[in-house]
Length: 227
Image (cartoon, rainbow, N blue to C red):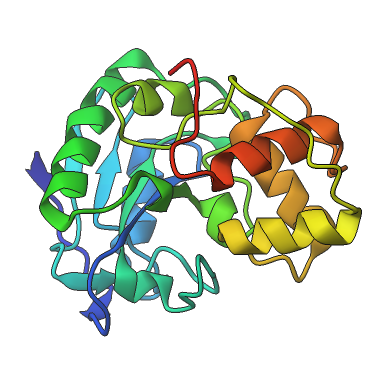
């Protein structure tokens, strides 16, 4: 781990209960780290992991890094105060979105495991930036290997077993999605974010039967997946 201090942080107002994963959305690691440590940018994260698996620590975990922006998850609106933020170097959808290299994910997994254990973060609170800000963000995106984290119980799995369609109306689906944790004020964005996370092969913003089945299973105490 390389210490790469950023001046962009404040004091926490809440205990840590979440872990938020991002992609940098910039052309390379040097550009991303330069921006996250530039006081004029007013953005930061606790950690950055480059594409060869090097971890940079920018902000101490007891401080409030500025990575989430305007966001919401499970009733918390000051997500920066309640979370640890990890940025994965990836050009993102704007600059040539691509798969996350094995070395990068191999470095991420033990870091997530350590943070999750130390702060007693539940699997349901290990989220992507698009989960907490669906109207603004797409990262870490549909190529992020959530299944690898889920197999290690570091994130929720995609449900695959005992699926049933509850037959919710569109309004009922949104109520359930809000109960799960999403901000549903932008209906299409919220459904799209849910799909990007739990059904990345088809992201169309339509709450169909498969989406209803997945969401119902996720609301159960122990969602059943292959991971």
